[in-house]
Length: 388
Ligand SMILES: *Cc1c(COP(=O)(O)O)cnc(C)c1O
Image (tube, rainbow, N blue to C red; front, side):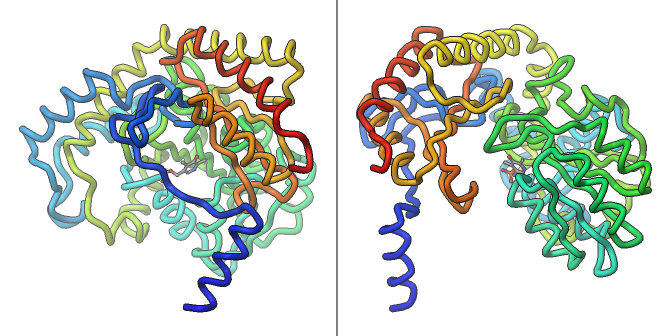
C-alpha cells in the first residue's frame, strides 16, 4: 500500500495524475458537471448522435423488443436478431462480405491480432497507434515492431526484416494527432509482403468518405482479402461497441478463435438496435458532415490568424501542441474557468514533451461557440506562460 501511495504521489508531482469528472446529464456539446454548465470540445461524438432523439427512441424500442441484457455470449444464446441485422448492414456499408460485432474497439483489436498472429509472427505498427493495438500485439505474443509515424519507407525496411508472417496495423485517423494514414501505400506494402493490414478506423468511420463509410473505404474501397477493417460505434455513431469487417474466412476464423469475442457476454441487443438507427442517420448524414467540415475549416482559418499552435490535421481532431505537461494542464484549467471543457493529453498517452490540448469539433457545435473557444484559447495561452 505504501508503494502505491508513493507512486501516486510521484504522479501528482509530475502533474500526470488523472481524475474523472461526473456528467450530470447527457453527452452533448453542452454538459453539466457539479451543477455548472460547460461547453465541451472533448467528446468523440462528432455528429451529435449520442443524445439524438431518434437514437433515444431506438434504444427504448430495442429494449421493449429485446429486453435489456443479452444474457449470454454470442456463441451460446446471446446473439439476437438486432446483432445479426446490424452486422449485415455494417458489412454492406463498408463493402465487405461479413462483419462481426465486438463489445468494444479495445476488445476487437485484441481479438483480431491474437487470432491472426502467434509467437513466430511479427506485428508491425505505426509508432502513434492507439494503445489497444499495442496491447493486442503484446497479448498475441508476436514480435512487436514499430515504425516512425506514417513513414512508409521505414515500414518497408522493417517488413523486409520481419519474420515470415507479418501483420501491419495502423490507425486510419490518429486518435491524438488527427492526421490520416497513407492507407493505399500501406496496402501496397502489405500485398508486396503477403502481410495482413489491420486498419483501425475508429475516428474515420461515420465522418470521412462518401456517406461516412470511413477513411478505409474511401482509400481502399471494397478492399482485398488481406485487409481487416476495425471500426467503433462509440464515436461518430454515438452508441457503443465495435465491429470487424472482412472476408468470409476471416470472420469465421474470428468466430472460432477471437477470445475477446468468444468469452464475453454479448452487448445488449437494444444497443445494436440503436446502432442501426445511428447507421441510417450516418448514411443520410451529408448535411451533418458538411457542417462539421465547415467548422474544421473555419476553426483552422481563425486559429491561424490568431497564431495558435495547431497541429496539421484536417479532421475533427484538432490538437494544439503545448509541449510541457504542466502547461497543458494549466491551459486546460484556464479554459475551465471560462466554462470550456478541453482535455490536456499528457504522457504516457503521448510522448514526453508532446503534451497537448486535444480539441474535438462536432457538427452539433455552433459558430459562435467556436468563436468563444478561439478567443479563449488565445487569452489562455497568453495567461499561461511557458515553463509553468
Ligand atoms: C477509441 C479507440 C479504440 C477503442 O475503442 P472502444 O470502443 O472505445 O474500446 C480503438 N482504436 C482507436 C484508434 C480509438 O480511438
